[in-house]
Image (cartoon, rainbow, N blue to C red):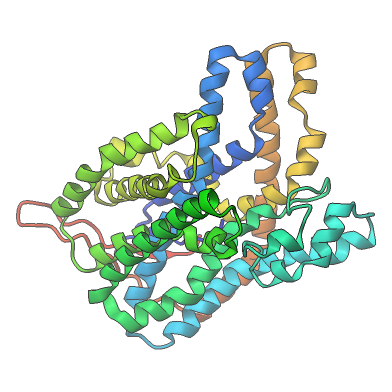
Length: 417
């Protein structure tokens, strides 16, 4: 996923829990994409069914990324809105974080690889229509006609997962202007309107699919249908930047947490044959609301609370640190890794299904992590060091104001991983 800046209070102490949130999000995506569903259902019995349901819930890991991204990016923009170089600093920091790995990957796949490897037909189609990739428009509905074989049909590499990078990039392009023009007082209303708009597009999409068939191309554009999470995260940032009290933040999260959590659980567990576009019209909004509640509770929780401790495990924070590289590279590598590392071949030697599954997941996830670590330190880090020339607006930031009966929570600012 795109770079989501981590947080630290105004005294400079790092808040590791949000690294853990990012780690959880990328873990959900990785399990979704690499989970051997047929093996689990065939060898693990009822446990395999339950585990597969949970793994398929990783579909919503990207929504968790969106909520966290909306919160942190909006916080940065609100803090730097009145400062010099508002637009220049923000855009240059995004360029230095996102572009090197993304465009470097495209150069390898579309320029260098064809010089050494014979491309299969789907890879050739992707290369012929690479305009959509170079311009962050591969999630635009018209690409479905341009790429008849799909972005994920090649045996060499897949690029379909770049749809979410397109959504984030479109957000980065437009949102700084929105924050700068409307100001913090009206931004909360804009966020609510964006949530309602995104749900409305999904509703129109569902109605169109039933009434007219899937021909209304613009309604399928994920940049329009996936704005809820970014808007919910932005709304939380607006609330905290405007001086929300700890008690008020907790009160809001308590009212929303349980019903949204139940809806999330129901959508994860519902049989696929019952799934429909209408279910996800309110369902996706409820899911991002649930993730928003999780974020609020992490921000207001005591440093030693179990709520924060769960997100501060070292391995989870490590996944969060390398989440952007993991997201970009794992999808590209998926077809190759799934050919090279086969859970059935492992099981033929091990003969114990749970161990076979663990070895398989450990191998594919470990390889993805290793490659992401090498990419970060060997390729991305020099670009990241240039961000010092484009300050993001200072250390002080979101402060959760306390009432007289409450202790003061630290301000939340951001830094790059």
